[in-house]
Image (cartoon, rainbow, N blue to C red; front, side, top):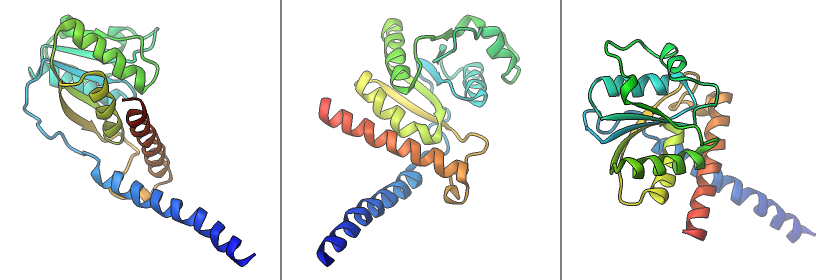
Length: 194
């Protein structure tokens, strides 16, 4: 009976400790600022999920960091004008250079939709704008969908997410743990299925 109890405690404790260590390392590895803020790419790609992402993409487009802006995962009722209204005002009209992708409903779909669009445009480099906690999985999925393409990460730290003291905020802790699990599943899927 004693051996069984010890085995059960180890069965629960070891994976829990491993998960917590992995989560801490995952949090520490998150990119919090753009690594190459001045780099020019063929495209800027924004994966929807926050107005700050679209505003940042528009700012980068206005600054000449790419020829086009592709916004993946746009809802069916969202128009270009409505996106522009909720974003920071720009000094130039950028409508000519913005493409809305409406097929993606999740991150896997964002990667597939982005890959299809990039191939159609014959682009080989992009600046990816998404949440900092989302970036590791996004890069992994793009590596699967667009091997050989250059992806410049441009992370956004969303309001309400504390990347430094994440453990002290319930919201940050939940978001980070959820994204870490999704990242692990994406890694397993890639290892198992290529």
